Length: 331
Ligand SMILES: Cc1cc2nc3c(=O)[nH]c(=O)nc-3n(C[C@H](O)[C@H](O)[C@H](O)COP(=O)(O)O)c2cc1C
Image (tube, rainbow, N blue to C red; front, side, top):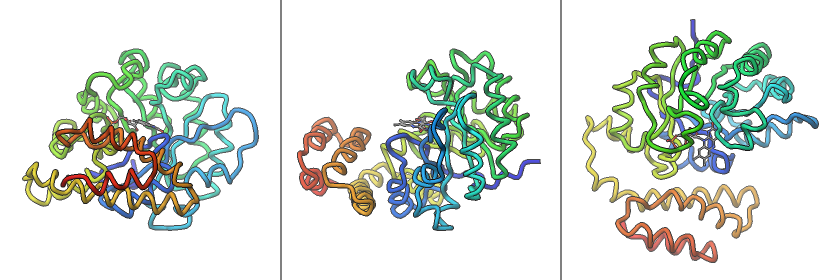
């Protein structure tokens, strides 16, 4: 019997993303685009040596979110760990903080992470994976999910991995439908999401190349997955959840001109809200500018002259210049 109720069916989830989904980012997003049903921290790398402290955990999740019951309901904690790391110490702290939901990263393809036996590496070593899952499950009473890929080198142990994960008491699975070796190449193959839905009893969250409202509709129809998660697509269109909800309300009719008409307004709301939150934690303008430039790499693709536009944002020397370009954008 699965009682996974962290989010209802057909939820739209903002993916965990390193260097992006820190506390100020998640707060800005919840305030600006409340249509996102749920958000995740990026991964906390569980250390192998050194003391694990409560401060480390609270800072990663965000103290303001921790203290706000409404925000807490919408935010989950992700860890990345290995067989030898101090998983139990981290889980004990999450348990003492009464964290409702813990997600384990089994998808990170980084060479460094994998060579230290973490992230997607665990998909290729079932003994180590089983050890990590048992450590978490036997010490954590909240909801426990994993976020995985279809395999490490290839998909040959996909079904066995799903079974192992389910048998160890994991209550939901997010599947990024690529192998580790595929990194971000090609297009995610949603047929693996369908296969996983058929093979496991726990809720399956589909992820990978879900870019526009029609894709969301199609992935739900084709795979019957419980919910969907957005990474790069959410960075490209941070108001995508709003677009989809408008689309559903309007019986599946959405007109491209509507998206183009609204995008300037939403881009301004997005950056204004982010600026407020980064200033609140004391970031200087040059640090905010650096972060904004990194976000601008994923934006503006929908503009005809996107290369010129992106170039001007990337060349901005001050935050004022960056914001000047933003306010001068055409609708
Ligand atoms: C910049 C960046 C950082 C990411 N960081 C994480 C992370 O911390 N944890 C994780 O599970 N996945 C991480 N991912 C993977 C995404 O959560 C997602 O699974 C992947 O991008 C596929 O979805 P998409 O096609 O919608 O981008 C990251 C992806 C990007 C682009």
